[in-house]
Length: 323
Image (cartoon, rainbow, N blue to C red; front, top):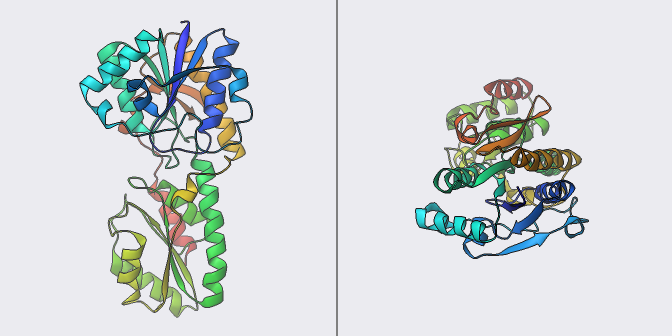
């Protein structure tokens, strides 16, 4: 293999730049040309490629976002779009592709391999930590720390004003980030998509806490919770709970940006190196992941077929500690 490409797709995540850096420098180390593809799969359709060298990725390991930009490409969902993307790769003599992103990005990579024979390796990059085949995804640790810092700050105000706060964190389809930030932030309740929300049970629990002397409370809400967004839940609860004043804080995209943590930089570096070496070994249709602190290859399909991170035992621990 003489040429490979790298792209970032889907939502950005802290540590993507560290992964790009690792891919570029590993390719250079092995004497392989590497091309950055801008704006994800859309860049393949628009032929937005640039040859990269080790110096092009200097000073980006500590930067959030992605220097290659990212976009969601509707045209790539269609066979014609994927055919055009494959043509771009072949016209530029690119034999292998490293895709940094989530399971949606992986589905696209798998289609490229199955339909056009493009060698593809996935690198998990999403703050939700909702990809099977890996214990952790790039960006999750940074997002967790941002969320916990926000919760800590909100706790100060909640205590001072004796108020109930609802804090919404990201997680449209996964409550892992909400679950972990709730435990680390000492939240009274955590609402996640994986467990149906019982508003009355939530109110009873908050009222019990008030009866025991709690003068403030924090409820973490994953944005994909079945009871609605945090503001919807807050309205329902404030009407019938002991807390007559409720406040809502949506952390939102603050969790995606900013300097990646040391953990995310190291994870991105390890996975980026292995992704390139997997391509050079002839692997395809695989993702690199961290399993028991070992970097291993797994089928791309495990990303959506074998999600195992969410464990109800964590929710039991959170409930016990909120007594």
